[in-house]
Length: 313
Picture 1 (cartoon, rainbow, N blue to C red):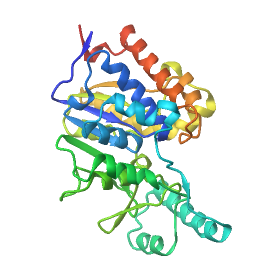
Picture 2: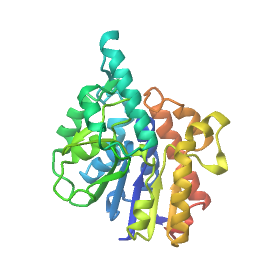
Picture 3: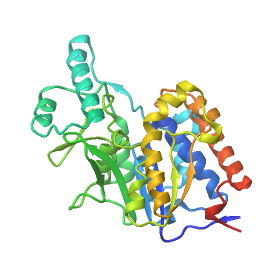
Picture 4: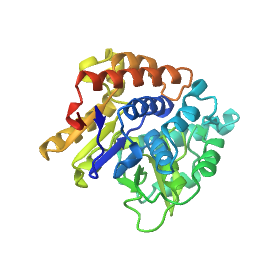
């Protein structure tokens, strides 16, 4: 079997923290053994962790490069990406209040254009800084947006609307700006300021954002969604509850694709991988195990014929 990448194929890479990046690498590494070349897809849509993976792919990094960076030695080659912002209780308390405000607004998606920016300018937010992670992005990827189509999904903090870097902006944008906005996890990292507006992680809108490919006319979609789960191998009740935030919008997006007769090849973690990922998707002690399990399960799914609709004999 060989995978065919039609000109109209969109690759959708979902959110999921460090564990999500490891899952992406495992799935993509397995698909490459069947001839799939992710960078040959006409469009790559990345949300949060998926934006990081997609950005590196569009900058001609290989899946093996990503393995060495994000998985090998449980991410030992990655810079520390959770650098505590508050050094003492005096600094931490207002930051906690600001973080709660950011998390609440990101979830509720209120139209807060009149006061959001003013509050953020006066009240610090974000328990952590990306630190050397941002430096690495700039060194590895440069500033130029990729020539091949790449969309990095974020959410406008003030109004809760989705904003897609590389698509919605009407002027040239830095790839590091787009990715930095897409990974600004509400409450964890500060909202990202770009062109006078603040943006948060695109996963606050949807951890998959698959509907963007549907409404843009792509006839074949390959989607990797680390925060959802495989309904045929569902996890325990705790994991299902935790992942319901991802599953609800994804279900609507899949219904939209079906109603438009668009083929979607979906990769979601099984119960075993959900357990390996855990609840804290930013921990790094299981990344190699997550990647290996994702690789094995993807090989199994292809060989069993579960995703034969986008494979050619």
